[in-house]
Length: 175
Image 1 (cartoon, rainbow, N blue to C red):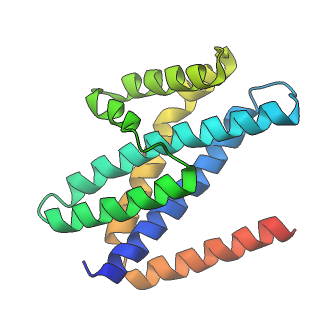
Image 2: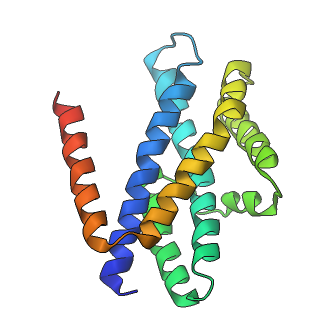
């Protein structure tokens, strides 16, 4: 892949994951009763960070699986994506997301996510944990689909889709 192709494909995948993070975050926030604004802001940041770490792990694994015969492309795409995730989701650079690589299945991943969110919040919230259990398979499938699209779609299609998303995003914030 050329540097420009890596840039476009990583941006597409990051933007797709960002859209999913925001959708999931809103779904998880809905499990909480009304809270003061400061609590909501802290909760949102924690959810975005933790979902970003998990989604980053899922994309990384899929990229390596899909591009196993193109190791340099997989490495370069993952590095570009890592930078976007770190900046966009304010992810820590401490390697804490590597814990997901030690887990063997989706059930363990959602358990880890629940534990991490509980630790970040300083409390356990059963409705949120139930929502994690109920939604995680669909979220992983969506991230897998976006990763596959980022790797396989023609660059023209990726550019067009990103322009459409950008226009929708501008409409959402101005409307």
